[in-house]
Length: 174
Image (cartoon, rainbow, N blue to C red):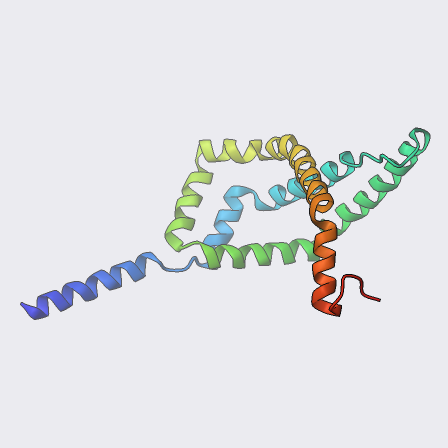
């Protein structure tokens, strides 16, 4: 009787370990294929660059100079896009993404994602992702910027004084 309980416990432990198998690289690559990962990353980078360009409110820039400043920002965002789209950068992003999936998800979870994103519903969701990113990126950045500005106004001086106290032992470091 005692041996049966030990065998049952061993089998349960083995089954739970088998279910928690880490995702294999080939499976992650298959997931990226059904998700159209490279296009998704390109679309995300483009949406981020567009949002950054659109968020430049330029309150201190005279109205007559804003277009010139916007052109400068757009030029730098173009440089950013070229860098992000460089094959070595894309390969690095993909490597980091593969490693991240392998660290976070089990093989069972990756298999489930492959099945979902390979389905008509999953493909439809992925096809709509660029529109979703475009619709949400700029408003999210606006919310975050306003919260950061409010936080800095409320706490900036206090934070600086506390840091100065910790580093210099007084409110102002020389």
